[in-house]
Each structure stands twice: as C-alpha cells, then as structure tokens.
Length: 453
Image (cartoon, rainbow, N blue to C red; front, side, top):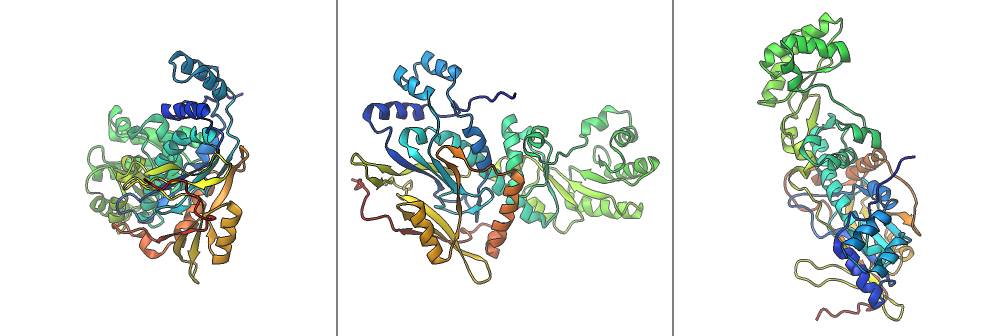
C-alpha cells in the first residue's frame, strides 16, 4: 500500500495561530465563505486559465495532522496543547465549488469558493493558493504558446529549470494549457502524460564521432527517433543523421535544432532534408522558446516545439496573482453577513458569488456575470433567468470529493472555453481582459456589519 505524506504543514504559521485565537474567542465555529479570485490579470494578459484544481483535491485527502506534525507543533510551541488536540481531529467537512479546471477566468471571477467553519476553511488558504497560483500561471503561458503554435505540437521540457516537485506540477499544468507531452517521467507516471525525450549534446560528445553517436541512438531507439544535429556543424549533422537512418534501413523520424537563428536554420534544414530525399523527416526546435518566439516561427517549416524555462516560470508571470479572502460569515446571532476589505488597491467584494458567462447568438462569450447572493440555488436561478452558462461545479460536498478531473479532461475543457472567447482574446499583444466582468448584488438587504470606518 502506498503511504501518503501529510500536506498539513504546507501552510503558513498564521493559519494555525488564527485558529488558536478564534478557538479562544468563540469565532472558530462561525460558518464562513472564502473565495479565490484575482483582482487583475497579469499585465497585458487577456484571460487566465484555471489549473491545479485536481491537485488540490488530491492534496486535500492528505491534509491531516498526524503524530509527526503534532509533535513538531508541540516541540516548537507553535500553538497550545488545546489547539493541538483540535488539529489532531481535523477533517475538512465543508463544501468547495469552483470553475471547472481548464476554464478561462477574468478579474473578479470566483474561481474557487470554500464554505465551512472559519477554522476548518482558513487552514486551507496557503495550500490552495500555492497550487492555484503556480499551476494557473503555467497553464496560462501554455495556452498562449499553443495559440501561437497554430496546431503544431508543443512539448514541455522545463524540469531542469525549476524545483523538482514544481516540475511535475508544471508538466500537468502545461497539459491543461494544451501541451502534448513532457520530459518528466514522474509527471508521465502520475498523470498519464505522454513522456518524450531522446538525447542531449553530452550524448554526442561522449562518443568519438557524431556518426558513432547517431548510430548508437538509432540502434536503441530505431530510425523514427529524433537526432540532435547542432552539436558541431548543422549541415554536416543533417547529412550524417539522414545517412545513419538509411544505413539502418529506414527514414529518420526527426531532427532537433537547439541553437542559432531557428527560423533561418529551419528553412535551410528543410531544404536540405528535401534535397536528400528525407521528405518525411520532421523538424523540432527548442532553445529558450516563449509564445513570441513560437509565433515568429509560424512561417518556418517547423513541426513541433520543445519549451522549458519560459513555460515553467509562467513566461514572465510566475504567479497568477490569486487571493483567498473571507467574503461572508456568521455573526453572533447566527445570521450570515457579507464582509469585505476596504483597503486601498486591495479591496474585495463581499458575499457568496455565483458566476456565469453570457454568449451572443453565435456562441461567442461577451460578458462574465458575477452574482453576489444568499445561496447557490438563488445564484444559479438568476443565471438561468439571464441565459448565462454556469461556470461553477461542486468539487467537495460535506467533505467528500465529488469527482477527480484528469489533466486530459481539463485540457479538453480548456479548448472549449478558449474557443468560446472573442478573437481579441487570442492576440499575444498586450490588451484588456477579453470580456468584461459585471457584478450583480442580490444579497438580501444591507447585511455587511462593517462600515469601513
């Protein structure tokens, strides 16, 4: 049986100290609503991509305080013994609703909503944000890159440019954004992603000649393999690669270019391959690609792209800038009240929110509706009245996970969601969010207990 490591300490200390203080004040058991949203998209981005939801549901199952975690808290006096006793029995028993993984989102979109007691829901803040902020950033970059690729496969190769566990998460998020494979074997094993990879420059250099290296690779991987041809001279490398495959009785599958002017090289190499009769041999390119470099290669005879550093770092935006805020809670008389921050540039909007997307007669998204309301049922009824497509689904009910979504299912949904957006959403140039977000408040009465003073 596989043993799972607890995820309970993948959290900030102040989550636990808040629990301790609210246990003493009596507020710990107040029913509360927390919401994950972005105040703004990263500069110039026209949409975000929800990714990481599936990983949250996996990690939630292991969010338990075992003897090892409790001993650490006790030894370092993080919280009191009474709080440790409470944590020992901790299980999340609330509800989580969220946008489907792969869905596009915009400023203010309530992409994840956690309801439960204050204490049990606040504990999940750091875990949820650390997963969503990383995965959504990578998925957004991947989505922009696959748009730029115009149907040519993009392959994830960023493991050597990030933390070893982040590499696995990034590979999954890249698939959500449209990538077709990963070099990371653990991601392939965990998430059923196609693993890809052949050889690096060191493989060529360890052999006495380039011919020896190509022959050795073909001997083990077959003629359909991809040979890296730019360790020395590209033209001679292409000649030797094609010859090595023919000597083995077949046609070379592909060559890889990893340096220099990739556009010019791809054109030259394609011509050379055709002249050599290797018309079926494909060209894949790597070398620090991002969405702009991929777009620039659009007119070149390239068949696929391998992307590393820029992908796993969000192509300039390593976080999706998501926040986790309390938007409603039970008061001392048992009434649910809207609550919101009034801080300059960091304000929030109170109330449980139900979201939907309005589309025109051609099925093109025109507006994101965000309804602040008293219940899910009330919000969904309002969306139905307005003809909007509901965006949220139940992920956890009464502590029980409702469904596990694979990266491949999330990727399929992302294609549908992205295809629904207006044309300007697909542009790589800087611009405003692809569609506007409209807030509608149907929360019953003036129930915010704070006046901001």
